[in-house]
Length: 260
Image (tube, rainbow, N blue to C red):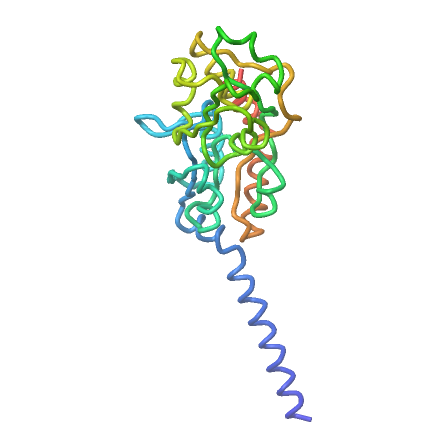
């Protein structure tokens, strides 16, 4: 009887230790961020007005929001450069803890990673020269052999171009932020992008025109921040911090500053 009781006590102790260990090691990414006081933020940094690399760092709608989130967490930010073609691979390889910069929420991405709540409803539109705006009134007008389309690799804009503009002359330019100037200078005719980027460049350069703003080429969608899918505690806390900022008007303030 004593031996049986002894074995029972050992079993209880093992179970208690196992439970304690699982608690200690729960949320490894969150623990690492909070212990190091450092949040690694990946961004291509080439998509105005959401995130653009400047001479002094990064600026934009998403930059304001992620810095406000970091302040709420009590941590500092380390920005990690990435590219649209490598965005998914880099976040899954633990190169950063969150990705920002005008990232479209879609099924393909959310199957592989987490995304925070959507913001900045948009549709796919076209950035063209103002002098040519009457030429492009429908998708079919873009999908012509005489139309030169310049795309940036790796994102949903490239996917749209490859699926819908197969008859056009399509070329690739690695630096997204340089494409509007190429269109304005007549080195291309069309850049497929989203509502806010097109409006930004059309406002900044009178040679450019944001086409299809009132009737986008795709149904409405939203942008969102990407999180690795490896720590439920981290995802839960980041979602809470986002909702906290939203409830305080922080998301609206960023939109009023950058998206109007």
